[in-house]
Length: 109
Image (cartoon, rainbow, N blue to C red; front, side, top):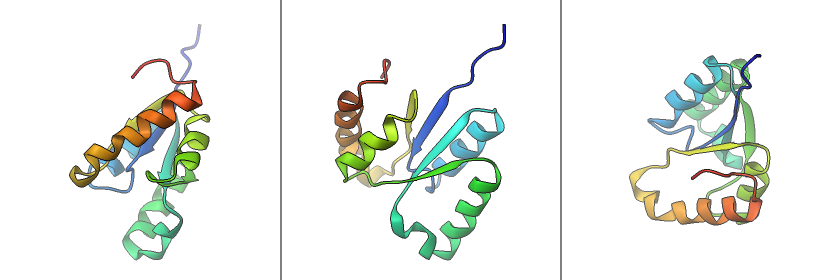
């Protein structure tokens, strides 16, 4: 019986730690999704990183930690959510929890 790979969403995937998590997930063969803000590609460093993600098979999902509907929409595509948001946004992870609850498809927090 083949093991089923997870569909993983990484929030904060273009950040210092997040980029390593995104790449490791893709290398492990998981269906990997990275939540990215609409304007991310306008930053040359992030644009290069997004190209690397795409080349590795990562699906870029446009959304924002502060846009509830975009979070819910992204979370409905996956079965695992990993938050790698920066220190300044730790308290805002409650937005992710609220979106997970509304999406209803994530069973373990």
